[in-house]
View 1 (cartoon, rainbow, N blue to C red):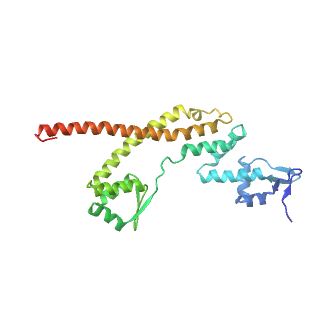
View 2: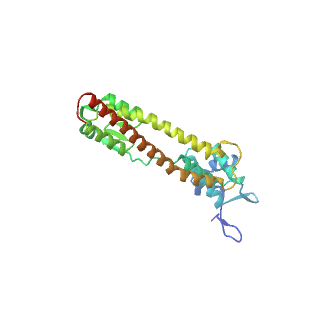
Length: 258
C-alpha cells in the first residue's frame, strides 16, 4: 500500500518516518536522533501517525551536506537555530563557503622517479626530497611523487635547467614561504577587523547580512591578489635597480668597463 499522502489543496508529498529516512539515505534511528537533537522540525501529526514533508527531506539533505563539509552536529544546530531566528541557513552556508574557499587554483602534478631523475639528476638527494616534503609541496609514493602545484614544479625544473642548484631553489622557496605567510596574515587581519567583525560577536546577524558579507568577500578576494602582485613587482623594480647600481660600482672599483 502506498503510504505517501498528499496534503489537501496543494498536493505536497508527505512521508512516514521509514519513507523519509529511505529518501534521505539515512536510517530511521539516525532520523529520530536528529529529531531529539532538534535538528529536524516537528512533523504533522494525524492521530498517532507522524507525517513529514519535502521541507523535512530538504533539511536532512542539508544536514548531510554540512556533515560532509566537516561540521559537527552542534555547529549544524547553531546554523539551523540561526536560520529559524531570522537568518537564512542557505545564506550562512554561502558565507562560510566564501570564507573558506581555496584562494589557489593550482593543479597537482605527478612525476615518476625516472622523470625526476631526468629533471634533477644527482641533485635528487634524500636531503632535497626531505626539504620538499617539509615545505608541504610533495607527497612521496613508491613509484614517484605528487607535487601540489604544476606551476611551481615547472618553475623549479626550469630554474635547475638554467643552472640554479635544486638546494638553492628549495632554500629560496622556504624563505619566500615565510614572507608570503606574513603577507597572508596581514590580509586576514584587515578582512577580519573591517569586513567580518560582525562574526566575532554573539549578536545574531540581521536578515540578509550573511548574503551581503558573502558578496563583499567575493569582491575583495581578487583585490587582495592584485595588491600582493603589484607590491611584489614594485619591490622587484626597486631591488633590481639597487643591485644593478651596486654591480656597476663594484665593476668601476675593479677597473672593469660597465
